[in-house]
Image (tube, rainbow, N blue to C red; front, side, top):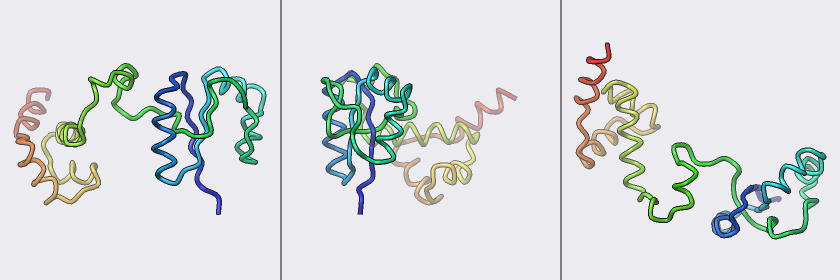
Length: 146
């Protein structure tokens, strides 16, 4: 059975190698392209051929590696923070930010926020307590906006 294919388009070889190693450790087949090689492949149709046959047709240069990651950046992550190791957030910080955003989006309604996050209501209540998040603040903010 063929492994899932992950395609990474980047001109940053270091990030390409990191993504490639991670994806391969997760069982993915990885292809890394420079932006120039990717654009050439899209314009000339050779990329479509490669994806259909899974045979590399864009070979050559430092921009192509045998392993790598995804074309789409993670939501909410700016391009500059990806390349700045000092800007990396821990998982609990990302989780806290996602919970706060959902609570504000649903104006303090924890049941709807839990549904949007794909977690149970009890789990959300536990996380709200763990991260000292005040849902009533979101309710007050939505009241001022009305």
